[in-house]
Image (cartoon, rainbow, N blue to C red; front, side, top):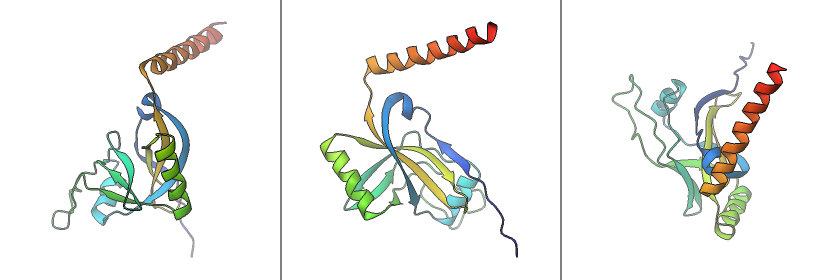
Length: 155
């Protein structure tokens, strides 16, 4: 019996997160999902741009993540913007709690993807919000890198 090799496939990505926040550490989490949610995510129909993660009652939750109903799952559907539980170790949860309370950080979902085994995973980042001045600096650096690459191609 041969095993099928499943490649890592991106399902949803939060592109504005790196612009709006300074990302420190990243952490991979599992998600507790219903079958219709997984089917919908495999069709790349999920959105995590407006979502965030928080620690409530000793557990990590993903809040405001939008996963639409799958077209073939009408009788056993799911709520589109329900809270979803994230799965991490207790040691990691304790470390996150310390960062969130002491250093005033937030948990931002960066990427929702399928791993090599076909499981849905979420990459969250421990982030601190950027100010307007920092965003301008980021834009200047990005513009300079583009201009530098154009000049290198011409010469």
